[in-house]
Image 1 (cartoon, rainbow, N blue to C red):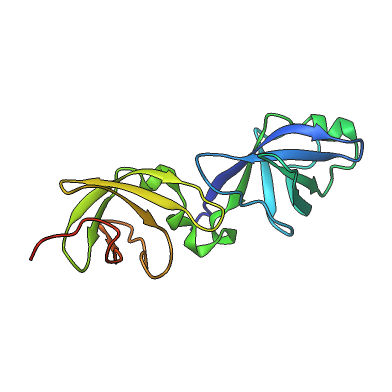
Image 2: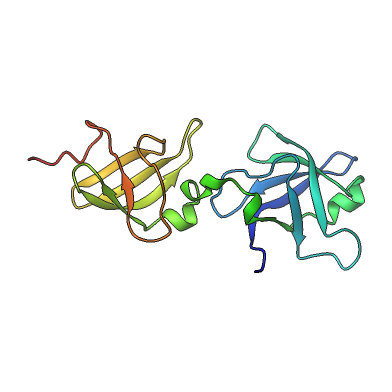
Length: 174
């Protein structure tokens, strides 16, 4: 079986003379670049390394991550990566990635396991502690915190079960 890869970041610019680069997350994903992760720059260079290992990674104080990659040790080799997309093996990404993948979540149906109320995810908002899903349905709009107590799993198909806390909204009269 073939390995599956996922685009996780784009190299935005170089930083300094030692070959560090600034990366930004793509496709609405949270930052997935971390030390020890093996990444592949695409489109690949005709010559030179195509595979890199993240040797250091830190927030740069803005929207990106300051990243050092194996095989990239000077400004010229870092400049060759600017504008490229970094891919990682899906198997190397966090297991709970489905909870944060806005591209796959927006439009998905959700169902409250307590009341049976339904809706669809309209937006995924990033927060400092957790994501928040904006869910719109026949009973209105609610903001659902993406925490274990509310969202226990995201199935590949079908509605996503939610345990919407009492008082949050979607109160159905019995």
